[in-house]
Length: 354
Image (cartoon, rainbow, N blue to C red; front, side, top):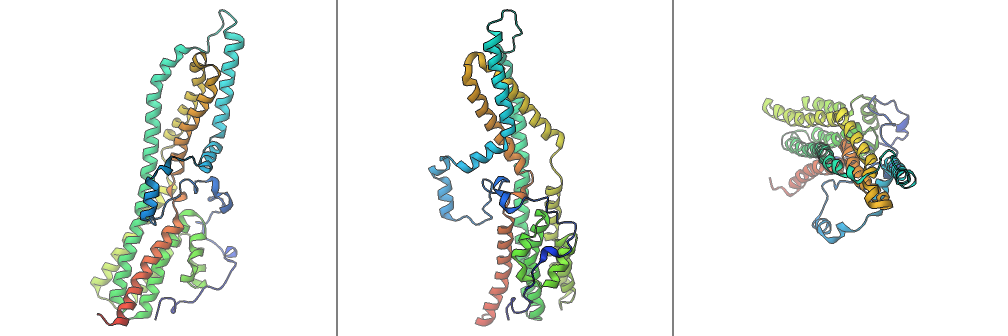
């Protein structure tokens, strides 16, 4: 008897018409057709599926080749700042050529003497960008670790269920395994505020179960409660029950960390001051360069703005890592790990090795 033989296939449609919990906010996540501009092209994570060939390609000279789509994305997302810097550079150039250089005693707005203060201003601006990007990367890596912890704990729970519950009650054991496999999709849907992860794995639950989970305010907590309810019916010892609940609790602990990353941004005063300082630096740069570089200041300031703003843009995108991480890929991998535990036990039973 396999896991698929036990549960009822979800045949109904029209899930979007069901009453949803407060977790589902369609405005929180962009539609699929717009994700091209929202970080899932350049910042797509491997989801733990890289092979030896992928690593070799990653380490080859191809990493230096221009990538048109990411470049266009960077230009598009920094377009307002580029437009402001372009306008300020043109103003500085016209002011210097048409008025300051031809009018003795005029207000000196453009001077190469201003370059020295700007040289020293690069240091605090660089520190702001470095720390901003570093902290955002730490948030991304923490989310990746927590998603990996979910897979590890689910493998442990599935292994214990197959070892302790399956021999005594195969039906209960298979039901537990399929709900364990549905925990990561429910978690992904919750944090991404979209139904896609759960809909991609809806064959694991019946229509009634899916309706209940979607209607709860916290789908992952609802699935966890269903697993605990089934565990309470299992014929296991007190020690075995404690071990199962402890492993399940480790999975639920990751929910708190992921929820913090998705609901608590970095200190807003820090991020806003980082952007403002970058803006003021780029707006004043043409007045320090134009006397020495002439109209070459225009491409120089635009390229500098694009480079610095792109770094800040990456840190802003990964500040909420679950919007750029491949949640669907990760949840699918977790499901495969859980199902493989049950499949290996079924293969052992057929072979009669243990």
